[in-house]
Length: 439
Image 1 (cartoon, rainbow, N blue to C red):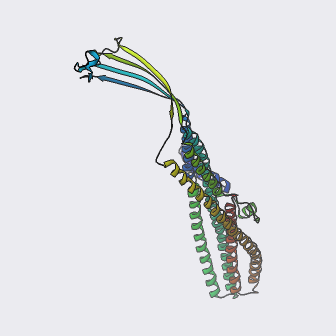
Image 2 (image 1 turned 30 degrees about the vertical axis):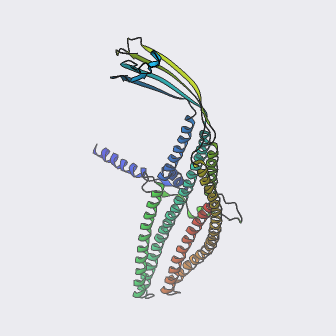
Image 3 (image 1 turned 90 degrees about the vertical axis):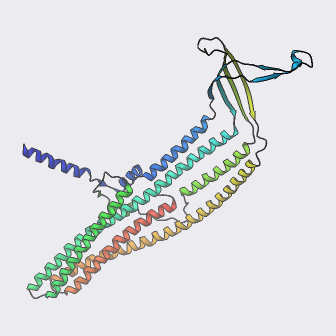
């Protein structure tokens, strides 16, 4: 029984460890981020608020119904003066009278229905296009998230590759150290050579440890940008060579720039134009129909549930509210939106120039990165061949230990240069795509 319990506990620990570990590709990381990132959730909520405001404008066209109840006790009735000539001779004195009852209760039902309101028509159009503006904000947020996560994934993958290389370098340094020890026993190497190679082993181990720490840090940064707390130890499934192929891109001259910011500025300009039109429409009258049905209770005794002293009355009508003079507010507001429209046009032109310059800059960076990648790839192939040759030559005693050490350090530097060139190329592709509006 005890063995079964131990087996169960070990199995649970294994499952728990596996549940925190996930196979993570670049596409998986992006999709998780688009689901989990709070900045995108905030923007989507903002879009929902704008959509709700659109529905609120629609409710203005629905009938408005209200009810009033007024229960009044007249502790002292109001005094009115009746001219004496009404009741008697022309010179008769005025008479003081009081009309009413002690209890005066009024219950009414009111109905108001707008037939035409120019402001509602404009507000509906403005709210509708503002919703589209917020959706463009969502798209822009998604683009920024894709860039953040993609570059973070590239960084983590870069350090992962460096960890693999540094581990291989530790192995190579240990092999050279072992060869030197063997040569020392055969008087083909000196104690100095042995000590020098031992230092190379320790340096390789230190570099390997640093690369592992940097890899952990880059993974933590990637998980932070994904905003997924369920993953602890992701396994990056993409490979550098595969990503180079997937992100291969040849920039095109004079390619159309499809930036979301330009679309937003066009929408913003349309919003300003609609507000200008709204100010013109507010000079039109607002038409509405209204109605009322009321019951009034008049009695000196408060017996509303048994008394028959309820007196109904009702009315209905048509109302036209015509603006005449507002101190010039509408004209000044329209002038403000005219200036905002002009500013929006200037901003659109400025953004177009800025993005054109950004595309040219990122295109140049991409071309440079591609050239460097091609160059470093050739160098890496050459130095790997040279290192194999020098290793065999050292075993055969054809070269000195210092010659192999020089080749070894050149190999390490070339490996690092190659990985950095790959990273720079991938990042350059992403930034060019974003600048062009195709990310």
